[in-house]
Length: 81
Image 1 (cartoon, rainbow, N blue to C red):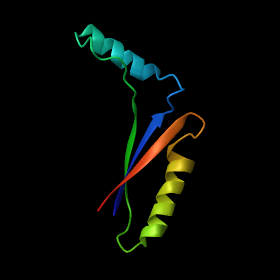
Image 2 (spheres, one colour):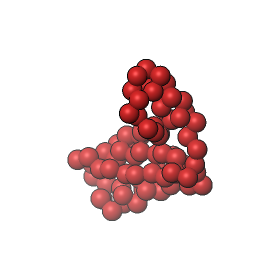
Image 3 (cartoon, rainbow, N blue to C red):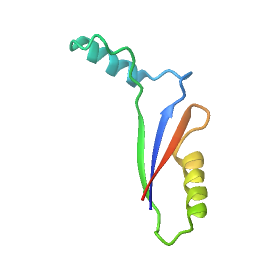
Image 4 (cartoon, helix red, strand yellow):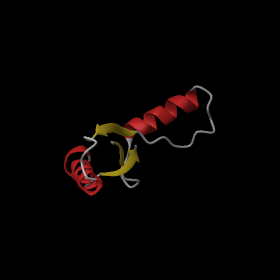
C-alpha cells in the first residue's frame, strides 16, 4: 500500500520560489502563466498486511506532525494500491 503526500504552502502564505519560477517562465515567453505554487512530494510505502484504517491514521499523523508545518502548509494524501 502506498500513500502519496503533497505538501504546499497555504494560499495565504507567500511562495517566493513559486514567484521566481513564474517570473522566469514569463521571461521565457510563457506570458499566460499567472502564478506558480511549489511544494513537496512524498511517497510513503506501508506494509501490505497493515489494516487500512491503521495505515490511514498513521499516514495522516505523519503528514500532520512530521512532513507539513500546519501553521503555513497544507497537505493532501492520495492512496495507490
